[in-house]
Length: 245
Image (cartoon, rainbow, N blue to C red; front, side, top):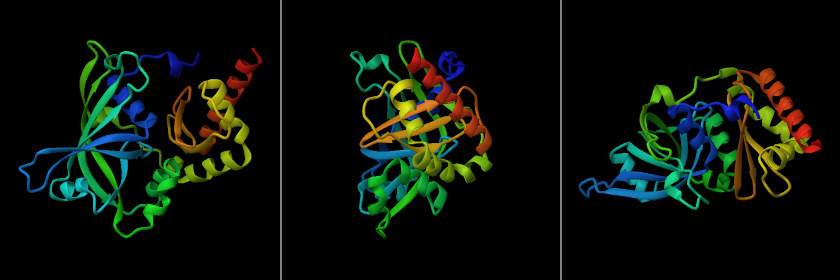
């Protein structure tokens, strides 16, 4: 078992890991003109390489009207699905302020995570947003409850990797589909054939098959394309050794 799998994560790293592993969240906004009554809605989410949540929202949605009046939001990332006792699982409420963005790299990162959203992204009334995280509250089981500030949640940016990400993902899907499948089926125990990579960041990579997503972490953080290549090769070797055993 790798160091990444055995080490105890800090509360901030747990929050970041939870956000990276999920593709949806509950968005809470204060209702405009209704004395700020809380309004919750389901949104499909992605995160940037540092862990900042990314959203694609319609101007016609109630939550967008709300956030235009007050940009403060809360996103609940719920990692309790499938647990017999859901309250033993991890969930995090991430607080921050939304900012409309016009950034092709971040937009493409979101759309690789949610390919069916490409048609909506072309509509004039849909826009991309980033949540500028301020703090978060995580409950990860009995007694594991923490408030965590943004500096301990978000990871350090890796500009060289951000620039190289799209090319790495395309290369893995076009030339190393077998590696993606090994990551999902052998290392993560996920069913199905045809898993594709949707993103990579300093801590790991994201996979998708139809409506399912999966996340695999590296043994150690990476900063650029060469270090990412070495980390991906190491995962393949581990998967093949595990499969042979």
